Amino acid sequence: MRRIYPFLMLAALLVGEAFDRAQPSEPQQVIAGARTADDERPVKIIVADDRAYAPFSFLDPTGQPRGIAVDLWKLWSQKTGVAVEFRLLEWDAALAAVREGQADVVGGLFRTPQRDEVFDFTQPYYTITTGLFFHPQIHGVQEFDDLSGFTVGVVKGDSAEEWIREKYPQIRLELYPDTERLVKAMQSGAIKVFVSDTHIARFYLAKLDSDNGIREADSFVSVNPQYAAVIKGNRSLLTVIQRGFDQISEQEKRTVVATWTGRPVFSPASSTIFRTTLAGIAATLVLLLLWNIQLRRKVARATHDLRQRNADLERSERNYREIFDATSDMIFCMTPKMDGFWT
Image (cartoon, rainbow, N blue to C red; front, side, top):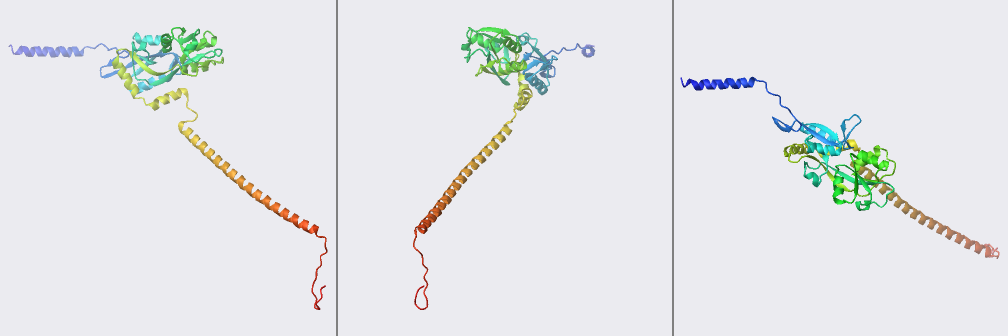
């Protein structure tokens, strides 16, 4: 009888497990940045970025995310199979969204000491220059030390704000939510100087049809690598993001950038052909010039010889004339006769 008990207990366990499997399970909620059960990659990530940072990231008139960074992230999504949701906000709010867990990634930013305390960064994927722009009535601006007494406009939360506060604490700053409003403030005369990433400032100066002669300093304030970043400590997501960017070739990056910045009128290949052709034409012209010089010299020598011969002939003819004119005697023609006399 005791031997039957183990079999009865085993049967009860099997029935209980089968009953549990038959019960409907609760649906699993998939959130941005969460991992699936069968894959280490997240199903979707939320990328936060600046809404007025054209041509890198901005909202078009219909409210859709556009720009170089947006297209690069779309290409990243194609390479990895991870869906990307864009949240384009005012720049300071975009950084806060990742800090507070409302987004997974900052789409593109510069690396600074303060940001190193908050974020982990990918490898750089692009380079952007930062420039100094000033009103045409201001002269002699070459570096920041020349801006003493001026209020300088910057985008709130931008790396330029951190850099100026650290290096030039004596300079007064006026903060704006984005580059477009920064440029508008310059146009309206609210500020006379601003610091901005050069491509973005030039974009909005062109878009807003600025005709007040805003100048740009000859040298850049800085040349900055562009990174993506996650909240500090999220190394697993950082690895997934970096692996995705590693799959994007330099040619693919150049193609994306070219769709927004245009292509050069002369490609490197056509420029080489143009320079070679131009050099050939120049060499031909030089040869023609040398040949022409030689020909002129030959003609000059031949002309000189001809003139010399003509001069000799004229001189000889003149001598004969002088001899003939000077002879006043009669000239007799005498012939002998048969009888021995001359006639």
